[in-house]
Each structure stands twice: as C-alpha cells, then as structure tokens.
Amino acid sequence: MNTVSLEVSRPPQALEQELYAKVSWRLLPLLAVAYFIAYVDRVNVGFAKLSMLGDLRMSDAAYGAGAGLFFVGYVLFETPSNLILAKVGARAWIARIMISWGLLSAGTMFITTPLQFNVLRFLVGVAEAGFLPGVLYYLSLWFPSYRRGRVFSLFILGLPVAGIIGSPLSGLILHGLNGAHGVAGWRWLFLLEGLPAVIIGLLVLWRLPSQPDHASWLTAAEKLQLDTALANDKPAGRGEGFMTGVRDLRVWVLGLIDFAILLTTYALAFWLPTFIRSTGVHDPVLIGWYTAIPNVAALICMLALSYSSDLHRERRWHLMVPFMVGIGAILVFPHAAGNLIALLAVASLLSGAVTGAVPVFFSLPATFLTGPAAAAGFAVACSVANIAGYVSNLVIGWSLDATGSAALAMLPIAAFLLIAILIVYRLPRSLVNR
Image 1 (spheres, rainbow, N blue to C red):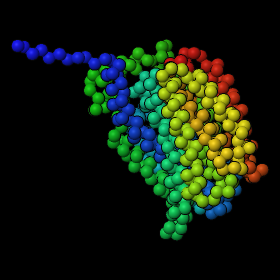
Image 2 (cartoon, rainbow, N blue to C red; image 1 turned 90 degrees about the horizontal axis):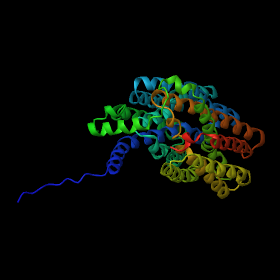
Image 3 (spheres, rainbow, N blue to C red; image 1 turned 90 degrees about the vertical axis):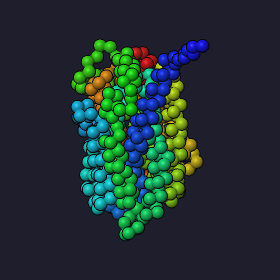
Image 4 (cartoon, rainbow, N blue to C red; image 1 turned 60 degrees about the horizontal axis):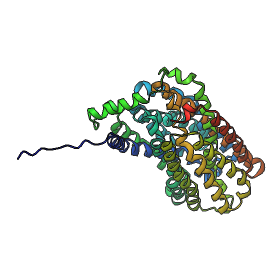
C-alpha cells in the first residue's frame, strides 16, 4: 500500500500572526528596554531635585527652567536627527543617540553650578533628539498600520515601566548611596542611571537590523510577506520625500494633540515626587514607591486602549474619551493635592487616561505618510509636542515659587486637553479609522 503524505496547509491568518509574533520578539524587547532607560534618564532630575537644589543653591523656578532646557535642545534637533536617521539607517543612528545621551547624562554627576546644570540638560536633549520618533518610524518599516497600535504600546510600555521600576530605584539610589565615598546621592543617581544607555546603545548596534531585508533571522518568504503587507497598506497618492512630512499640515495638527498629552505626562513625571513630599512624605524610598502607582495605571490603560483601538480599527473615541477623563481628574487635582491617598488616586486616573492614550496617538502619522516622509512626520509631531516639557516645568516651577502650591498650575492643562478633543473630533475619517 502506498502511503500518501498529506500536508495540511495552514490558514494565512495563522501564518501572518506567527510572522509578526516572531518580528515582535526580535525587535520589541530591546527597543522597550532602550525607551525605559531613555525615560528614566529624562525624568530622574525630578528625584535628584529633592536634594540637588540645596547643593547647587537653586530655586524651584530656576530648576524648572533648567530642567526644561532639555526640551529646547530636543525640539531644535528632533527633525534634523530623523533626517539623518532616514539617510544612514536606524541601527547606527539609534545606537549613536543612546551612547551620546548616556555619557552626557552620567556626566551630570560632576556639575557644581546652576549654569552647568542648564548646559548639561540642553546637551542631553540635543543628544536624545530623534530617539522616540526614530524608533516609531523604524517600527513602521516592519508593521502595517492596523498592527501599530499594539506594537507601539509594547514599545512605549517603557514609559510607565520606567515609573514603576525607575522611581523606586531612583529613591533607593538617592537614599542608599547618599554620602558613599563622599559623593551625594543625586550624583550617584545620574551616573548609575546614565551608563546603562551606553551599554544598550552598543547592543542596538550589534543586534538591530536596519530594515526587514537585513534581518538574517527572516526567510525569503517571510521578507516577501512583510513587503507585500506594507505595500498593500501604503497610503495612496503621497510622495515619500522627507519634506513631504515636514510640509503636511496634518502632522502639525497631530503635534498639537501630542502637546496636550505630554503637557500632562511631563507635569506628573517631573513634579509628582514634589507633590508627594508636600503631603508630608520625606523618605525618598517611599516617594519612589508612591510615584510608581500612577504608572501602573498608565501601563494597564496603554495595553487596554491600544488593543481595543486596533481591534476596532478606530482611533477617534479612543483618544477623546481618555482626554475627557483627564480633564475631570485635573479639575479635582487642587482638592486632592494635600492628601496622599487622594493625590495618588487622582494622579493614577490622570496618568492612566492620558498617558494610556499615547500608543493610540502614535498610530496616526504613518496612516498617511510612508518612508522618509513618515520619519519627518513623527519628528515634527514630536518636536511640536515636546515644547510641553519646557512649558510644564516652567509654569509649575513658577507657581511653586509664587504661591507655594503647584496644584493650580495643573488647571491650564485641562484647557489644552479640551482643545485636543476638538481637534481629534475634526480629524478626517481616513485618519482615525485604520
């Protein structure tokens, strides 16, 4: 009897799911760790502030202005950085970004004057410019638009995880190493949280393929499948030149939406340790653990919102509803500022709603731009948005010096979220239903 071997063909959907799972496992863990380190290095000045201001003889307003200089450098060099990335490739440029910002951030341990603090914060911003939009553009080379919400959320998980792990870690370093070898805890904080960026940058250079064609772990058939999916998903009728993304008005509009998001996110990231201390908690370790709580809410909401948004291929209401919740939380914020439990509850609601919507927002630019134009689109949107980092630090620092309370300084953020809601409501269906 002849034995006939029958090979049951697998459904295309199962093959596609398996392929994107493979790509995700190869790319996302390293990139998420990179973003985790980037965000820790960006906001650890909020913990360093708890003891640094006395050593440097800085006021809250001077600190707010200096911390905000990071975003001046970041915004000025964001788009040029992504232009270079599009030309030289993601692997080399992302590695360069990480190594240079890690060395500069670690070098902050040596500052002795407010002027040196200002210069280093500006230079760290210049060095890090292009990282987030560069990675988002890089991921758009691998995943079609209908998968990017979940993919971006897995990458951007580094943001809330940085709060969940990084905040307690910063508190432990600040407290446990204070005075070790005659060095203040805040100096150890910058050194120990800056050097890992250099290590991860070298790993990126070694492990990250610049594009699917360069991935040795993909078969020829898998590369073809990725190319086909991306070609079918490509927006029609758009040029792919870098300046196409810079000139597209929709990119600037999206930047205004992200401005409202980051105004909220950075206000909490840079000032929540100070808010918590104002309730009577002075132990840096406890402040670190309490700061982690709103970030847990952000992590849960990121996963839930991005999954739901991709499942329904809908972005509009997945942005508008969280912004509405955020406005409600901000209006309650002044009444909760003096009570630790109330403060953490409101901060968790605000962080979960607004920060949780970040991956949904970042799905939008690549729905109408591709190639270098998408790199420019991500960069311009992030450049406009990151002005919020400077504004939030400046306003809240001034409010603390002028009134002794930063709670009222949170109220203007609600106005920007309302403007963002109106903008999202007016976005064309083709942009928010993919």
